Length: 390
Image (cartoon, rainbow, N blue to C red; front, side):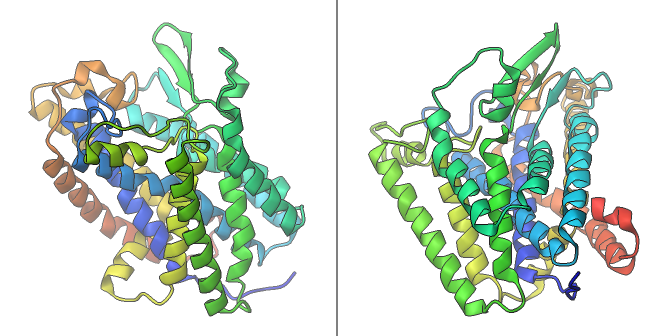
C-alpha cells in the first residue's frame, strides 16, 4: 500500500464550505419564509425574482457536495487498499442512511413518533457510497462511462411511471407513500442519477494526484465547465431533451428567465446537473490560489461538513419553534407531520425575505465557533477512527 501525505486540498474545503453555508439559506427559507407555505419558490407563474434566485443558488449544493464526496473518496483511497476503501465506503454509506432515517428525520420534524420519513440528501450520499464501494473495482474509464451514461441518459426514463412501485420511486421517480393514516415516507432523492454524480467525482479525483500538473487541471476543468454550460443553453433553447419541465413564454422577460432556469431537481435532470456541475468545475479550476480570511472562514465549514449539517438543521428548527411560540402559533406548531413547507396549517407563519437572510447570517455566525472548535479537535485527534464518521 502506498502512503501519501495527508495534505488537504484547500480549494475542495473552500467549495464544500461555500455550499454548506448556501444550503443553510434554503433551509432557513423552508422554515421561516412566509411565502414558502403558499407557493413553490421556483414556480415562474407565482414567484418573484428575489425569491426565485434565493432558491436557485441553493441548487448547486447537493450536486457539488456529492461530486466532492466522490473526489474525497478517491483521495482517501490513495492511503488505503481497494478492499479497505470499499469497506470504508460501505460502512460510511450505511451510517449515513441511519443518520438520515433517525437523526435527520427527527431534526426536520421534532416528531418522536416519526410520522413522516423523507429520504433526502444524506440518504443520497449514503446509498451512493454503497454503490461506489463496488464501482471502485472497475477500470477508471468504465467508471467514467457509467457516470456519463446515467447523467446524460436518465431523462429517457422521465415518462416511465409505475404507480405504487416503491422500488421505481427510489430508483428514479420522487414519490410519497402512505403506510397508514397520517404516516408515510417519501423518496426525495432517487438513486438515479445521484449515484453517478458521486462516481463522476471519484473519477475526477485522479486529477488531484500530487504528480498531476495544476495548469493542466485548470485548463481541463475550465473546458468541461464551459462546455457543460454551453450544452445547457442549447438544450434549454431547443426544449428537446434534458429537463422534464420545458421553458415557456410568460410574456415577461423576468418570468421567461425564471422559466428558462427552472430546472428539475427531483430527480436532477441533465440540465440541472449541467448547470450545477458546470459551475462546480469552473470554481474548482479557478479557486486553487484563493487565500485570505474569507477563504479561511468558509473552509472551516468545509472541513467539518457533516458535523455542521446536523447542527444547522437542529438550530434552524429550534429557532423556528421559538419564533412560533413568540408569534402566537405556539411551539407545538413546529412539531411537524410533514416537511415544514407542506404543512398547510402554517400558512400565515413566517417573515419576509430580508429577515430570512438576517436569520441565515445569524445561524452561520452561531455555528462558526462550534465548527472551528470541532475542526481543531479533529486535527488534533487524527488517531480517533470514529471522527471520520463525523
